[in-house]
Image (cartoon, rainbow, N blue to C red; front, side, top):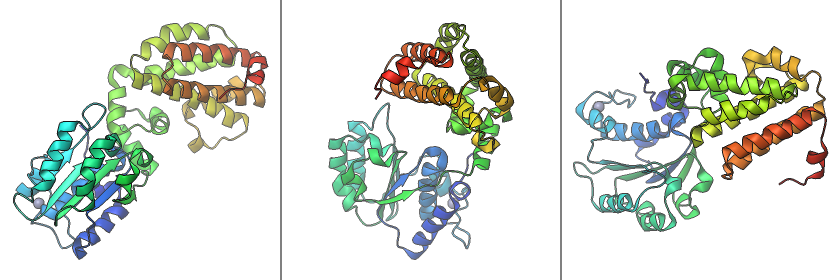
Length: 346
Ligand SMILES: [Zn+2]
């Protein structure tokens, strides 16, 4: 069962800042919270709502989280806490219409109303424009929280009307703990952390042992490529295409590929601090495997994997990307740089 972490646990300093704003009655009307859910964007907005609505706060303003008001906020049933999140790729037109209607109504039960809009970067230009007036001048007692993992993707007109708060990345210990609770074994911790997985994503990638199987696949493939074994090409057809059954999984596989080659590059350059390595469990083996290769070979190989990852982002087919990458890596490991040297890659 996934433990729910409070904003105080995830973002202690920012939570304290909000607590004092609420206490002094100086909460601004619109905030853009930048960070992923994992880092506590939703938890933080929820915490503010709890503090605004819970009548049973202790002397430090901590809501009790158990009273009917808190329960309604936490279960998403509070009439004065309006939540919108993207359905599919974006916040839909009817959601925007609903938001506008809610903005026009004052608080149903009190004088306060909180809006939590997740995925603010998915608001289309016209949707955002139709909300601008409310974001700029919401009624009294209205507090708006726009949430986004990517500030740069949020329209400038929206950003400029909000106070922008960037959440801090979680301490790695905390990430580790969350992942372990999600059932990710300890030896995969550095990889899962490197992939930036949330506990939830970690748990879903553990289904049918997908993550351990994929890590093994990528490492076996690396072993073969690093020793110039053409069998590595077979891994692509059998393993990679099977494991990469959807886009998200394909991206994780390619991330694992870049991570193992990055480790190889670090080790080739005698960087051995365990906290900088992702395939930590296999450190000795990686170092051994790339011993016969030159630093230049490992560098070019590592760059090729990054380029492959980039190509996948550009919607080139997964099969194409991994096959081409494997062939080019095999050439580089043989000491043949002709293609790499000559081509002027973007
Ligand atoms: Zn309460």
